Amino acid sequence: MEKLLLLSSFTIMLTWMVPGSCSQTNIVLIIADDQDLILGGLTPMVKTQNIIANMGVTFTNAFVTTPICCPSRASIFSGQYQHNHLTLNNSVSGGCSGPHWQQRVEPQTWPAILHQAGYTTFYAGKYLNQYGYKKTGGVAHVPPGWDWWIGLVGNSRYYNYTLSVNGTSVFHSDDYFTNLIKMYGLEFLHQRHVKEKNFLMVLAPPAPHAPFTPAPEYKDSYKNVTAMRTPNFNIPVFKDKHWLLRMSPSPLPDSMLPELDRVYRQRWETLLSVDDLVESIVIELYSLGLLDNTYLIVTSDHGYHVGQFGLPWDKRQPYEMDIRIPLMMRGPGLPRKQKDVRPVLNIDFAPTFLAMAGLEPPAWMDGLPFFPLLQQNANNGTKIDRKFLIEYHGEGSMKTISSDCPSDYSDTLSTCVPEQMCKCQDSKNNSYTCVRHLEDLISNHNFSYDFIFCKFRDSENFTEAYDLNVDPYQLNNLAPYLSSIIENKYITWLDHLKFCSGLTCHMYHDLNVQNSP
Ligand SMILES: *[C@@H]1O[C@H](CO)[C@@H](O)[C@H](O)[C@H]1NC(C)=O
Ligand SMILES: *[C@@H]1O[C@H](CO)[C@@H](O)[C@H](O)[C@H]1NC(C)=O
Ligand SMILES: *[C@@H]1O[C@H](CO)[C@@H](O)[C@H](O)[C@H]1NC(C)=O
Ligand SMILES: *[C@@H]1O[C@H](CO)[C@@H](O)[C@H](O)[C@H]1NC(C)=O
Ligand SMILES: *[C@@H]1O[C@H](CO)[C@@H](O)[C@H](O)[C@H]1NC(C)=O
Ligand SMILES: *[C@@H]1O[C@H](CO)[C@@H](O)[C@H](O)[C@H]1NC(C)=O
Ligand SMILES: *[C@@H]1O[C@H](CO)[C@@H](O)[C@H](O)[C@H]1NC(C)=O
Ligand SMILES: *[C@@H]1O[C@H](CO)[C@@H](O)[C@H](O)[C@H]1NC(C)=O
Image (cartoon, rainbow, N blue to C red; front, top):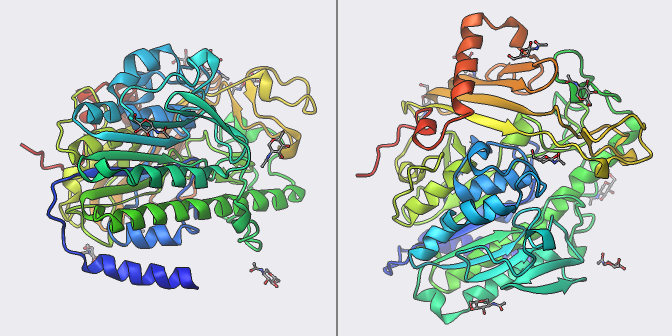
């Protein structure tokens, strides 16, 4: 009760605040792990919606260009498509925190550029899935450009994890990780120099990634919530979907649904701690008088599915649940309570944050800055034509195939476990490239083209295509019915985008940006 009162009076205060006079431009980026947009992933974050979305801009068409952690995070930090940063999967052999990344890409990430431009930089949370292990340089490897480095070793965990704290290994058994990230964030803000020099703060909590462990105070907060029964929830999959989805069991037996409900609800419970994290940071910035000089951005590394098309729970698919992400931001000069329908991508973050800091984004970045455009009241009548690439390299590994699942599974499959009825979550031939196409904004919530066209690299050259305007849940694969003119058009775009780099990618992204001089 007390907390609620505090929040509402706090929100009112913010509304009345006058712009600060100091010339600092700070950036605070919060990246959740596996938080979806379209299955209600933002629902538990009520405070965040009040203090970020309602005080700023919400992007209703934000996408990742690859729906998997390490490659998408590599895109977030580099501003590049996967085929340019070469982080292809979550393994070191696939480039995750590997030599190419560390030697060639990591030194020119946007945080490193901001650091060279004089920013004090702070990172706390999950970084890349293979970070901190002996084979990737151990905890002593602090990525270039970070003054404060609190990097998680390996993949998301809530308890019992090891951190690199400025290059030194620190183990925590009982500290709930999201809350520890909050503690470090506040400690950083309490430094005196924070008020004197521009800073960048990245907070990357583990939530709502598996194992979905809520903080004790939020255990059972959503006791009665069940997984969203979208029109494509656990439907049987026939010939019009690619091979992995057709594997048995399809659909999942009813006995499995309580497990899907549990996963869904615990994901929400873990996000309540992220909501607290955002609130604490915003309150602290406010009390330091820095809120008006700070851009705050809340997003995720990709989406997620729970039960859609009979897949248990994971990401890695080219469907809307997995490729759409939450994205909201507030900050100096940005409009309030605004929804922006323009399509923006994870590869746009790098050039956007550089533009926010007043720096010219390098032309080799594949994404485009959407920062100047934020300040224009877009929407009706704005011309948009954006075609972008979704790329994914399917994983297969003996390590994640349980011996309790059918023995003919080879190392070309991945994550086949009895808890998920041995329904495999990935496969080497779950490899694909897609063109996602949005064109011609004709009203606030509609496009004349809202389309996806995907080619799988499997023995069938499988193709999937959906018209999202009429089929938002992707129930009808249009690939067999496309005219050859349309099909060839998408294949041509795909062939170009698969190899594009910098300017040759920008050609496909007309966001109607009135370019800064
Ligand atoms: C990490 O290093 C920075 C920069 O040297 C320093 O200010 C900060 O206190 C260190 N943080 C911790 C937790 O040791
Ligand atoms: C951490 O790991 C230890 C040893 O495996 C285990 O006993 C303990 O319960 C774990 N702690 C938490 C909070 O999960
Ligand atoms: C869940 O539902 C039960 C029965 O309808 C109700 O008694 C209980 O208060 C609900 N719990 C929560 C946390 O909403
Ligand atoms: C990751 O990518 C590398 C390089 O393509 C490949 O050799 C490796 O098998 C992949 N890892 C998995 C688990 O699929
Ligand atoms: C945008 O245009 C559509 C169609 O002409 C109209 O229905 C809608 O009210 C307009 N929205 C705004 C914010 O002007
Ligand atoms: C959006 O526009 C398309 C093409 O003009 C149309 O087919 C579709 O019905 C529209 N959808 C909505 C929700 O208005
Ligand atoms: C996909 O890979 C599996 C495992 O190697 C194989 O059995 C299956 O035939 C492949 N399917 C297609 C369509 O390539
Ligand atoms: C798949 O595409 C390749 C290259 O375009 C072609 O050589 C092959 O015959 C195709 N396979 C099938 C089953 O269509």
